[in-house]
Image (cartoon, rainbow, N blue to C red; front, side):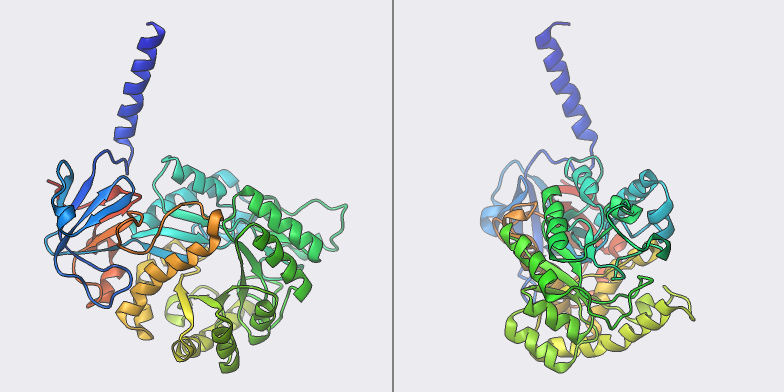
Length: 447
C-alpha cells in the first residue's frame, strides 16, 4: 500500500472511530417546538426553535426554524435550558475513600474518577468548578474525548498550612523540615502545605503552571480534616496577599474555604474575591461582604444531606453539626443582603451522595424560589466561571441559552420553574443532554 493510500485509509479509519465515540457531532442540530429557560428569566419562553451549529447556539426563533440540513429534534413543548454547573466539586474525591487517596493505587483512583465524571455529565451537570484535587489529567481525557464528562475548571491542589484544613498528614510526619520529602498527599496533588508568603506564592504559581483556572486556599478550619478546629483562622494576611498577588498576575483569582466571621473578614481584607462555605458568618460579616461586592459560593450542608457522613462521637461529627446549625441563617443572610451566590455541592468520598447532586440543587428551594435556584446553577455560576479571565479553559459563555453561547443544553420533560424537583430525577426527566454541541444522551427519536 502506497503512502497516499495509507493516508486515505488512515482518514477513513479515524472517521470510523470518531463515529463510534459518544458525543461526536457532525451536523447542525435544530431543537423545534421548545420552551426556553434562558438561565435568567422567571418564566419560560413561548414555543420556539433553537439552532446549534458546531459548539454554539447559532440562532433562536424563526431564523433557527428555517435552517435546512440540520438534524431535527422535536421538542414537543418541553423545556430547553442550560446545562447545570456545580461550582464546588471535587472530581477526584467523590468515589475514592480517604484511605485510597492516601495509600491506594493511583491508577484505581483515576479510573474511579473517570467513571464518576461520566455519571456527573449524565446527571445534567455539564460543567464543574473543581475546587481542589489532581484533576488536570482527568480534564485532559475528557477534553480529548477519551471518556465523556463535564467541562472542568481546575484549581489543582488546594493550598493549606501546617494543621490546616486539607492537611491529612499523620503526626508521625512532624516535624517538617527541608530534609523530609513531600507527603503522598502532596505528591499526588491533592493538597499542598505552604507556611510563609514565599512558599505560598510558589505553590500558587505551580498550580497555574499546570493549568489551574483559579486558586483554592483553605483560610479557616474544616470539618473533614483531622487536625483543623473549625474556629481557627489559618493563613496570615501576608500569606493570603501573596496568593492573591500571584493569581492576579495571571489574570485570575483566589477563592478560600472559610466558615467563620474572622476567617472570612481576613480573606476579604487580603484581596480575596470569592468565599467558599461561610456557614457560620454573622449579620455584620454578611453586610460587609455585600458592601465589598464579594461572591459567595455555598452549599446546602444540612443534616438531611450530610447527616450520615461522620459517626457520632468523632470530632468531625461535632464540627459538621455546628455547620448544620448555621446553614439556615446563612441563606437568610444571603437573601437579606442580596449576596451574589453560586451553587455547589462539596460531595466527598460518597458516590451515593453524588447521585443526589440534582436533588441537592432542588433542595435549595427551601430558601429560594425555583427561578432563583436554577439561576444559581446556570447563569450565576457562568458569571463566576468568567472570573478566570484568560485562564478559563473554555472560551465562550456558559449557563445561558442565548445566541453565541456555548451549546451546553438540557431538554427537560416538564417545566422546572413550576416543579424544581424535576432536576432531582435526571434519568427520567433529562431527555437530551448536550455538551459543546454534542449529544451525550437522547431518549427521544431524532428525525
